[in-house]
Amino acid sequence: MYMKYSAEPIVVLGLLLFAVLVLSLPYILRDSTVMFGDEAYYHLRIASLIQEKGIIKFDPLSYGGRPLLTPLGLPFILAKTSSLLNMGLEIISKTISFMIGILSVILFYFILKNLNIKKRIRIIAVLTFIISPLFIYLFSRSNYYFIPLFLNLLAFYLLLKNQKILTSIVLLLTPFFGIIHPIIGLLSILIYTLIKEKKLSIWHYVTSIIVLSITLIIYLPILLKFGLPNLFDIDKLPVHQQLLSDLGGKISLSIFALILSLIGIIVTWKKKHAYTALHISFAVLLLAAYFYNPVLIYLNILLAVLVSFGILKLIERGWESKFIKNFTILIFALGLIFSGLSYIKQASDSMPNEEIFESLSLIKSREQKTVFSHYSNGYWINSIAEKPNVMDPLFNYAPKLDEAYLDSQQLLYSRNLENDTKIIEKYNIGYIFITPEMKQGQVWTSDEEGLLFILKFSKEFKKIYDKKGFEIWEVNLED
Image 1 (cartoon, rainbow, N blue to C red):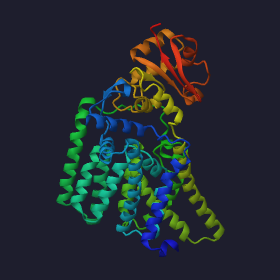
Image 2 (image 1 turned 180 degrees about the vertical axis):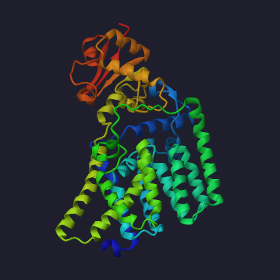
Image 3 (image 1 turned 30 degrees about the vertical axis):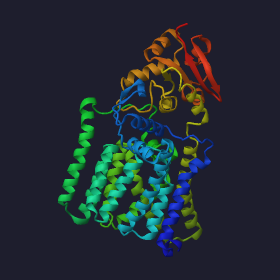
Image 4 (image 1 turned 90 degrees about the horizontal axis):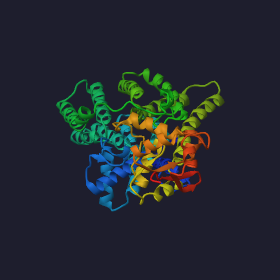
């Protein structure tokens, strides 16, 4: 009844306040004031380099130095916004993702309104979107995907308002954030137009040619010179675990949302002519997500719409037992909320913490040598300690990736000092960074396993930091 009769400004304000709460919770629940996430630190460091040197083509720290081939859209925006507002990069990084998240909620709501979706469906869809694990991932920290998602939502909204020039301008920005985003933006507009108007205009062809041309200008030289990205993924989860947040996926969906979306598909299938674009887009994105996981950020939008149809069907359906009806709806509602809250807790517990920041800051001003650790700590080594790493999670186009991985594995698990010394000299390793996670199953399971044994009994290594399981060892092979 509230959804049916409430004034729209109040409804929108309520949705925005809910979005603010959801995006604030990871920071409210977090014990540390340190910014969480690993990818955010990568973008922060590249933004800092852009501030100092302008657009750069070489990263001096990742893998000990490598060509900079990642999209520079986000670091460029962070750098320029920070300079323009005279604010720190970290504050800008936190604020911009938060603000883009709020704006995306507004756009999503009014896109549904302009598509003549009923108010109750709109509200449930936006609520589902806000509490989804992907919404929390996208807008609680800096990452590759939150700005291009917003740009594609904005482009689609402008198209619905018949602002074709502005739509083109927004679409022209998407290639600077990756190859997949302009393709999805163009496809969504083409599918919608073909189903609604049965034909494409000159504007569609011109816009598509220009956007794809910019995409080719940016990425074709990289593909010609370096080839396709490395198909290398350590500790890769099975596909079903990657897709579902409840099973540990990072860019993933709620299993309860998927179940409800199936009900939504059945409901909308009966009016398939009205929802043909929705069904085709959902099928295409689901197939694409199987091969390229980040496509889920767009699938999540459609999923929220289908979930709203599924929930409304459960509410409006005739039930023999009112208790069973309410219990069923409650289970699904709590399932959606639990998936979101679980992801919020996961985000709030994310590294780095104060100890990582303190330990790596210790060697920031020391001799510029490589820091060796588990590859998952690579971004923090680069950003906090400002030192080169041997490996980090950015595998695409990493130089001699297989060799770096094999050498890292040998150094972590070998108890042969002579072989370890060769690897240390090869990468100019001056420091070794150990975390509690590495000693608790991420790498080792005993205190004298592999590198831990070498560190403990060899005079070539000196412990210079030890606090709450975090250790830094300085390497001195000259003695």
